[in-house]
Image (cartoon, rainbow, N blue to C red; front, side, top):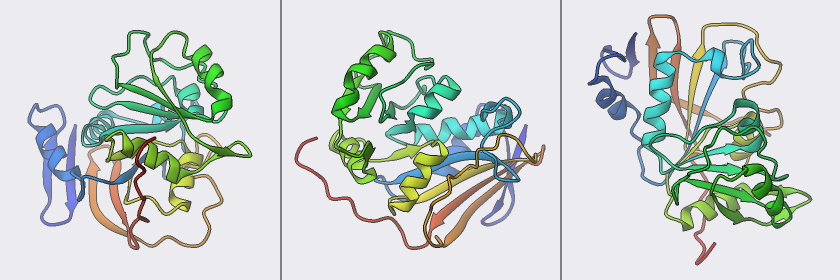
Length: 250
């Protein structure tokens, strides 16, 4: 399948089935800084987070999956909320560690195999949820990172700090909608990578959960279009992210 970069500059096209297309996509999606928070999501044209099966799988195509792999490869860690893990039977990315954020500790339905190598899987949760995490991991090996919680909620700053203390500077957040919105609301996001499937409707869940206060000005930095009318945008946050002060230890 052919995908064309229509902005910036002159139009350039690659065939994602070509072995050399990955090099072009890596160049097109390379982040501006090594320490960044990047949100990567897919939605319908009407802003729905899932398709006919209630997940993002039916919205995706070979171009989107290739771009997903490239964005993951360019990050130090992929971060996802437990609700998405349960709904979409998450697997470990091929080229990056996975970090899962859970308040309840319930990771039921994950697709992660038991023989996980050290440093490939992290679970961030309050102390009260550790036992449930171990139970529902069902034998998969993870480094459990305890983060403070207030009324069952954790701070996005604490999440970023806990990952960066471990050398995971470049964070790719794949949602779900609530986690992505919380990162935006906290002012921690450098860039939003949004794939748009050429469909209307789908699940009732919006791609970003309601509750983001005020407006967030964005600047389009890249736009790709594939031959099936899929659209792939890179948006930078005009005001940039807030600084996150590092801790001496996690």
